[in-house]
Image 1 (cartoon, rainbow, N blue to C red):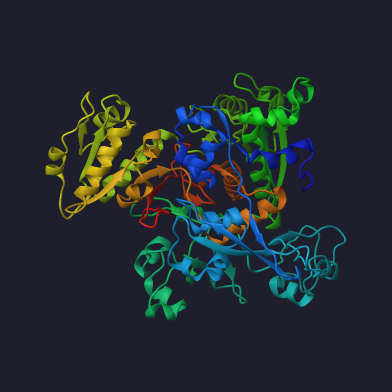
Image 2 (cartoon, rainbow, N blue to C red):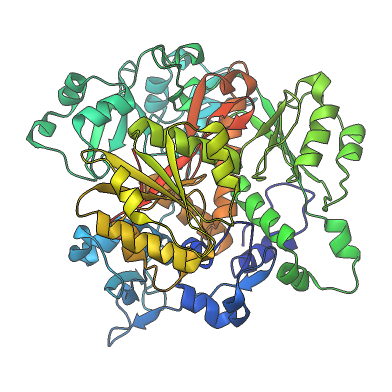
Length: 637
């Protein structure tokens, strides 16, 4: 287990992070199906360990998540370098999800299972390899991580730098023409010209003459030259110029060299025609010469745990969902801080135990008794009310405060930012997306559910609504008469009644013979987990829904998962990945020339699973996801 990165946090925090992956605390809106998707197990496997949930899921209840064992096949002499393992694909799993679970790359899975290149299906057996640690004595050299930029310390010379970073003096001079005579204390130099960020599919590269900037872009399923050119604001002619082979056609997974758009200043990043923000790589505009200070207010509650004689630390882990979430988030945040330091970002970090519970926190005491005059950004604590208290206390210093996890919107001052898109924002963005694609939008409501129908009636125009009567019956013939041929017909289903959902799904599948239909939900509920409402049926209707997170099978996402597992002995869950995303994005933003606040009105960014598009201090970075025919989840364009 890794050593503590920052002082002041007890050793047990990192030790118990390992066990946090085995428990899950049910949150509002979750269903058995959505939980099974998160942990890549089947609903039946979860029920087997938690039979009480057959009666339904209850908010804040902690359940056990099964961990699958691996079947090992040893060679006869047990000395081969690798051991062949076998894995059975579960319903709804993707190659990316399986690769994260097994700790191997998607490319390796396809290499060992060529048929998987065309898709996978439940029950299919996949072969993968792991290192046979007992049968080999081969030594492996660990490559030293070299930061992008480095600030020269007192008494350092070109010779000592070359030894420290395993780089030749001639290479140092080529990357830094200004040091050919000598190096000076305090100077910032470049140590590498290729950067791999665990955040998106883009890798920034600077060629040897230092003038031609471009990045690697991995072609996604269904993309064309036109869609790629629009997405990255690059002319098709420029793409062909860098990649002549594309004239023969594109294939999923192919890596293109795309030139970066000129004019990377933040003020020029806003689309002049649509007013939309462009997604950018903020590393390109980092100010490496100005040190920045980050503060994390983490609700560890160490004093309470240490002084409680009635519970052991492990018992706290089993019962305290807040502590589990905190530890996972913090572990992800540490990986973000590590990544920032490897990249040479000039940051210092302080961590305080905010000792927060539902009704109390020592945030006021922390701010009153510590010097925040040089602080550039604060992340946490996790409860909006305490985040807003911190915002009020630091308002006069104009220090941005980020609420990292709460899904409900807040009412903080101008310096308080909400990183998690609220349920209202997700719903708004869903309707914005639907209306941008078609004007044939219909809604089917349960008579017992009025929230969405009221929202549509008061805030959304052009949606035709239909309701099940008190007996649970709806006249689908009337609905069918309103469907439009030649257009996408979006059908929003708002019901948690099993028979109503089943009836609607079956009727809509029947309508697909004549109409282009896509089923839409604003949130998941237990009725969608009913055994007769199969994933196959939902996939046939391309079930569409809004989400604050996405599935990401890029090389960078896999690198992050691998690095996290190396440090923590488990794969990152949603809170750990969220900890990385929020923290790394905040660091990049605060390291801009004019700091965090200057970026929020100008740029949109994307990390491992999340995107950040702050509008009026609220993140509107919402994904539109849908079930594909092959039972995988795709991002709608």
